[in-house]
Length: 305
Image: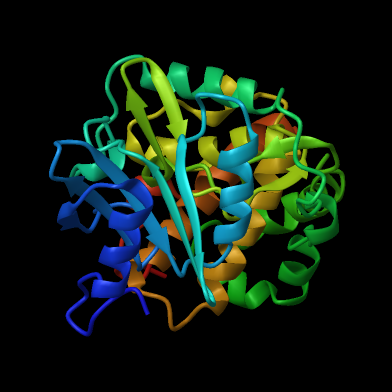
């Protein structure tokens, strides 16, 4: 274990980091963003810092990315430590960077959406390590299942039954044509709490879910969430992204239906992303005009029937 019962780093982890870097940690701070339970921003006696991550699923994959990809788009690796069954990844200190998600509400500065899109284009030009799994192998369509469970989908109150019936065939067909195959590096989890800005430099963190695939995947998933944070209309950035929009909408709608034990706020986010993407798909795929709810109308309260 890297943590004590109080959620602090163990003495063993403290000693391991001090020995590996040759300097004494004096401050361990749990970051506000990211989902890794055992991660710390660490300050040292000499005034420097580092980010320490341990016992996270996919940590070895993340190590492979940050140690082998020659780009300022990934954090610089300071050390990779293996102590028995435990792996520890130590990366550059990004505490002074601007993290959009480290604010309430999420705060993007002027020009940062454009910087992100340019960064994602650069990611798409990077070759992926051959050891990464293929996005195509993991792809699963969602709309055929929604067609079978139409009542559950309609109970979400995202759109009318008439719109659903008129658009369903087009959504099924479009999702079946999502171009997931490719050999580019795909981060596979681009969202505001997995990125930061050091001046104009964009740094993507949490590479544990990286795959080989089509770089459009990262752009599409990023666009699906950015309207919630003051970002652009996805259609305006990626007008040909209809197949991706259909797939993301289907995945998020199914999660909203089936993940009944998830926090209510998370199920609300799934529904909001679903309607953002259904509106996007309706324009991109020449489906019936979207007449369903706007994402801002969806709250944790049950929809009015």
